[in-house]
Structures are given as C-alpha cells and as structure tokens.
Amino acid sequence: MIVSMTGFGRAEGELNGRVYQVEVKSVNSRFLELILRLPKSLEPLEINLRNFIKKYFSRGKVSVSISIVNGSEDNGQQMLDPEKLKFYVDILKQLRKKINSKERIKLDHILKFEDVITFDQKEEMNDDKEEFIYEVVRDALENLNAMKKQEGEFLKTDILQRIESIRSESKTIFGMYSDNYNFQKEKLINKVNTIIKDPSKIDDKRIEFEIAMLSEKFDITEEITRIESHVQYFIDHVNSPEHSGRRLNFLIQELNREANTIASKSGDAIISQKVTFIKEELEKIREQVQNIE
Image 1 (cartoon, rainbow, N blue to C red):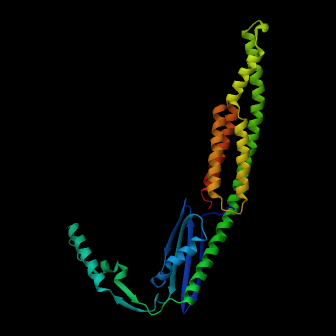
Image 2 (image 1 turned 180 degrees about the horizontal axis):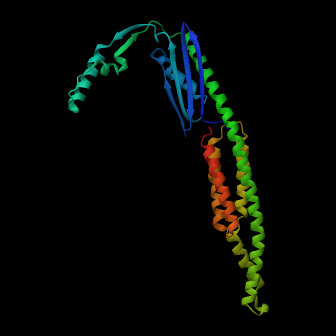
Image 3 (image 1 turned 90 degrees about the vertical axis):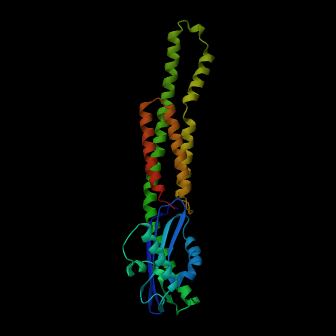
C-alpha cells in the first residue's frame, strides 16, 4: 500500500463548555517519532494517548497538539508556587553574575517560566472526559490518514509509470546486447582468420572456448533477469495492502546495483546511455519512496 508520510489532520469537540482542538502533522522520517503536546489537565492521559496514536503509524515524524481554544484550561484557581519562584530567581541571579550583567531581574523574566504559576484543578479526569478526548484524537488521526492515502495515490501513479519505463529500457538493452554479441563473435572469428592464414591450423574448439569465456565476462543476461524479477516484486509491493516503504527502498538499491553492473560490462555507448536513463529514473523513484510509510 502506498501511503504518504506527509499529511495534516484536525478535529475539535466541546465538553462542559470547553472546546478541545486536536491538530496532527506528519512528515518524513526513517523511524517513528511522536511529539505530543497536551494541556496540563490532560497530562494523566499522556502514556495511554501515546500508545493509542502510535497504532496509526509505522514510521514518520508525527506531531500531535491538543489545546483548549476557549475557557480556562482547568477552570481552577491560579496559584503561585513560592519554591519554584525562589529557585528561578536564584538561577537568574547566578546567570547575571556569570555573564557580568547589570540588568535587573524583572517580572517578565520570571514569567518566562510557566510553571511558576499553577492551577488548583477542580475538575478530575473521569471516564466520560477520557473517552471524549480519545474520540476527538481519533477523528483528527482519521482526517490525517485520509490525506496521506490521497497523496499516496499520486505517488503510486508516478512510481508505477517510472518502474514500467525501467522494465521497457532493460528489455531494449537486452535486445541490443544479443545483437551485439553475435556481431562481436563474428568479428572475433574474422580477426583470428586474418591472423592465421592457414585455416587448417585453427582449433575451432579452442576458439569457441575463448568466445564463451569472453561472452561470460560481458554477459548481462543474469542482470537483466534480476532486473525483471525486482521490477515485478516492486510492483507487487506497490499494490500490496501492507505498508511497503522500506521494502521498496531496498528494491531500488538492488535495481541500481544491477544497472551499475550492466554499465561496467557493456562496451556499447548506446547501452550506456540507456543505463544512465534507468539510473535517473531510479533516483526519481527513490526520492518518492522516501515519502512513503
């Protein structure tokens, strides 16, 4: 299944006069990395929410933000934490002394530390609130996945077109190689006949052996066969219901290796040009695959 790692989802819901808003963003990443931002009132749910969100992804850098867009976050009384206030003031004094600054410590400096002022929470977490939060998060994740699947369809169309062009070029290369092989064989025989004026002294079996050894050195049949196998395997995984980004990336590496081998074996300029085209298409596919989950 081709699913893009890039997407955005949003959802919101109202509970007890407060509107909770959830935004989810995802971008490319080799592994799964989850960043979760919560208001203080929802921090007790953090571990369970993380496990819940991770079920929707196999890899990618995912950022989930839950905020309360109206009403007080905890609907509680604001309180000053004197111990933290003293702690931060002492830090600021040490910093001022360290950098030899004469600037006075101001209220603005202290308020940069958000946990100096806390809330005396009045509303406890309960099953109804927890289920409500999960429902809003689920809606945002579903919206994100819808966007990722839509983007994945565009990627799939482009990738399949390019992989078919690689298959077509590899067949053309093999046809050119076969014609070139017969030409080189005849050319070698004529060269030997020119060097040895008396044909009776020619060891036909020895010539055939040398030709066979030479053809084995430059034979690209095995590489072409593997390219066809890799291409078909690639297409199968593109159409598979499973997430296949990592497998596709591996197959691109294998295809690129076979193309390099053909280029090193071939002494034909036109074949070399066609191999260059294949490698260019592989690079474009590789760039697309980096965005597939």
